[in-house]
Length: 434
Picture 1 (spheres, rainbow, N blue to C red):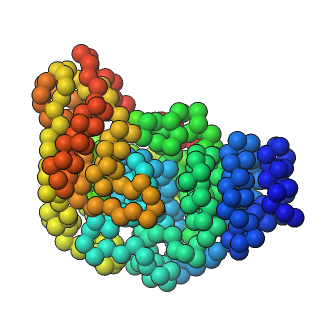
Picture 2: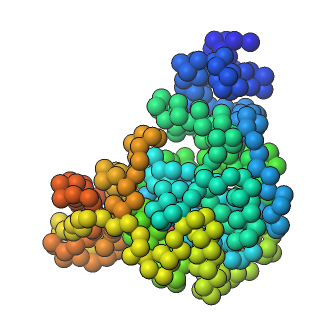
């Protein structure tokens, strides 16, 4: 075999064999396949797509390129949740403790933010002392002791995915369904799960801008996961406007704690419960959707989920005192208000624009090796549906300096649109696919 003929075959639309896919992936890992050859291969897949058989084979090869976590010591059903990424998406910080408090074991492998989408690990690491780099045996022990743990992908898990994703990021081949499926599932299958729940975002702040594209991705994820022996379910959720009221790492941790205490924005609370109840159902701890919804609602309102979160933070070296006093989280030096350009109702808030403004402040990263500032971000004061006066404050910019704050405020102001009539604000959950 040689890379040239494999690339040519995919370029011309031929279905590749398992052996050819192995040659490309494993050859890229050991140096037989050059960066420029893998780049050409990824672009060919981007334009030509992949069959179900190719997608399944690619996922399995990427999974087998590294280690699989041994979670046999963890008793009970193990279910993870994966989000395709959005703006203000702090749901993992709420869903994991809620599901754990309802009887699900949650060994969660999460990632860092890139571009306008935030990362769960970055949010958690805004908690002083918090570690997300636990060795596998400690990861399993925390899941067993607490009911949940959230860590990053180790160097040993699906190394082919890490190397291929870095190349996809700089070759404009990220938004490709077969490659997304293989990337997500190769990591999730390495975690020793019993089931998987997927949160596929739709809208301006998501990778998939239309319902049709999001549905295509969700169906491919559920189908491929099932074919590989991991039962999966997907929820399509709206990401046209930022989720909740905050965008930025410490700000989102604070909001998550508010929700776990019984408050916080309604859209964050309801979407978190929808995903957590699906996890309880997939885990088999509840036998029907109604019972699963009741169990997760009780886990939240009783305070058990908050207790799980506190124990989780402490178990991973973090300052659990932030649960009682969120002022212990990092805070910005400058807070600047964003004024409404018009009187009326807020009819929309462009999630992408807000996400890019937060990234410009340092809340996100433009390249994988950049650091993030845990304190900066955007706080929405007037969510969609709010009645505002001209000149009234619709958002707050948390920044390190006056100039950065002013630049971000101008950008955030452009994200808001106004109208004379109040818009209909529906559920963030658009569809459930199984």
